[in-house]
Length: 183
Ligand code: GTP
Ligand code: MG
Image 1 (cartoon, rainbow, N blue to C red):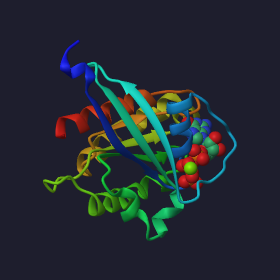
Image 2: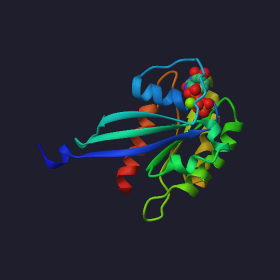
Image 3: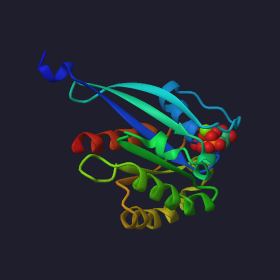
C-alpha cells in the first residue's frame, strides 16, 4: 500500500439555491439513494456526510451543508459558509425564476467565503428536475447555460434529476476534482 492510499480529506461542501429547487432531495439521493415527492422545507441548515473512496485510493469525507432556500433572506449565510471549499448551486428547470435567483446566491457565496489565497471556491450550477422536461427542452437550455456558466464563473453545469438519479454523482465528482486541484 502506498502512503497515498492512507490519506483522507474532509471537505465542507455547500448546497444552496432557492426554495423547493431540490437541494435536500439531491443530498438524500446522493447519500442514501432515496427520493420522495413529499416536500418538507428545510429550516435553517441540515447536514449529511458522504464518505467516498476516491480514484487515487484516498478517502474523502464530504460534509454536505444543506442550506434552506429561505436563508437567502436571513443573516446567517456568512456563518454557514465558513470554511467551505466548494458549492452546488441548484435551480429548478421547471421554474425559470429560480435561475434568475442563482446569481444572487452566487454573489452571496463569492462575497462571504474564499480560500486563503483570496480565490473564490468552485461552484457547480445544478439544473435540477430535468426529468420534467422533454429532450428538446433540455437541448434548448444547453447553449444558454454553457454561456451562463462562463459569464458567471461557475466551473460547470449539469442537468440533474434527484428523482431519477441522473448526474448527481457526476456533479459531485466534478466539484471534488476541482477542490483537489486547488488544495
Ligand atoms: P428548501 O429546503 O425549501 O430550500 O427546498 P429544497 O431545495 O431542499 O427542495 P426539496 O429537496 O425539498 O424538493 C422540493 C420538491 O421538489 C419536493 O416535492 C421534491 O420531491 C421535488 N423534487 C426534488 N428533486 C426533484 C427532481 O429531480 N425531479 C422532480 N420531478 N421533482 C423533484
Ligand atoms: Mg431542503
